[in-house]
Image (cartoon, rainbow, N blue to C red):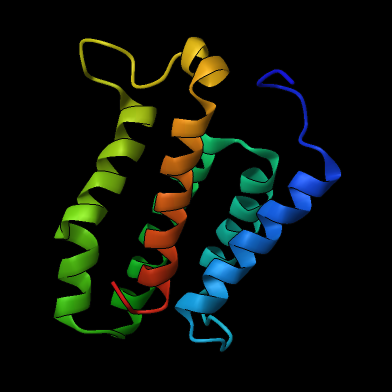
Length: 143
């Protein structure tokens, strides 16, 4: 399998199950209530994660957090501790910096290369899973 081949149907299903279970776990087996744009981003994130598009999954995980935080601030829902954690908590800073590196690389070396996509799949998948775990906790208010 190359980096552009689709995953097997079984692998796709396993990834979707993991994604759904992670969101369910964060929400304590209750529905995860998010705003309309966040819901759309989650739908797309679920698809790209299942496909194995790891870099895109990291980007969309941070995007989902940004959407939800923006909607909560606009509606005056949530508290300052939650907002501080998703903005400045160590793990959330890692996620935002990773996303920013992928989108706006300003370093002396690229944040990701075609070589990485071909040969670093396990590392990229771990990063994507970490990003989704952080996102799930943030959306469930457990950041």
